[in-house]
Amino acid sequence: MDEKFKYVFEAHSPIKIKNIPWSFCKYCGLVFLNNQATKWCIKMGCHNSYHPQYKQTINKLTKSK
Image (cartoon, rainbow, N blue to C red; front, side, top):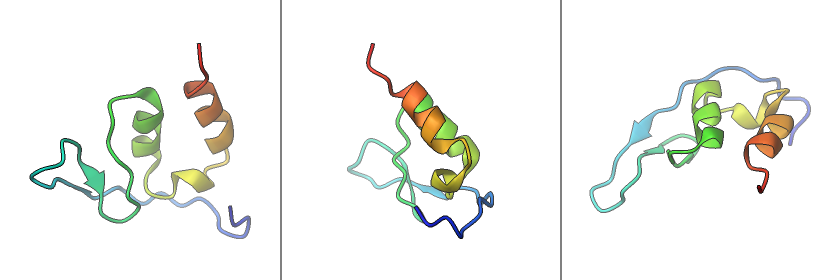
């Protein structure tokens, strides 16, 4: 991750292709799955990986039970 880039919100731009069951962002490639990690990433926008809480949140939301 590039530490010089600061988090700036930029909304996703979802598109749907006929033969693929999920939508995805045409800018960052995020696949819109139905889980908590994806919902957080959608809320944070295309630059979600630069958000200060990204690593902590993704680890918490994707931890095996």
